[in-house]
Length: 223
View (cartoon, rainbow, N blue to C red):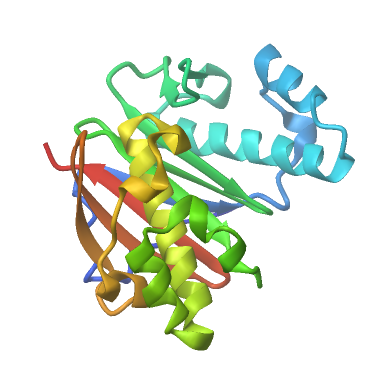
């Protein structure tokens, strides 16, 4: 399993020293050496599509292995739980803030002992972003994206991942309302890979980068 820090070679990214980010190519994870618990197995059983079920199984195993490496425990000791809003917690390492994201063939984890944080990764594929604009974009963002032509798609992925990372860091997810957040134009184009985003829950530092076909955004609380 390949595990890398996607921000390692981006000196203009603002990742706090106490925060660790990893993305993992979980396509070749050995599912026969699984350390999944009953909750994980029940979650897998709910998926009817065999391909999606196998991808999630590999991701669950990859995340446990990476968290084991980052916390100095064995994979069997890693216990990821979720609160009533779906936010993950690491009961096997009290006081550790964690965030997890998944997209086809890849997983991501971010951990910190100091600040709440959120991570989001998305596989950049051709989509009609205009069909989703009313769910995630402010009117100003929609107008700006519509002027970008071919550059609108990567800008939309920056917007999507950054907003989801912030909403994860807050602990609310999409119930918070993506349109309640506003991102600078320079961040959307990639000219500025970092931004400070003010929310009703505080100010969050957001950094965005890409690795091959993946867009990756990290949000960390500043207070």
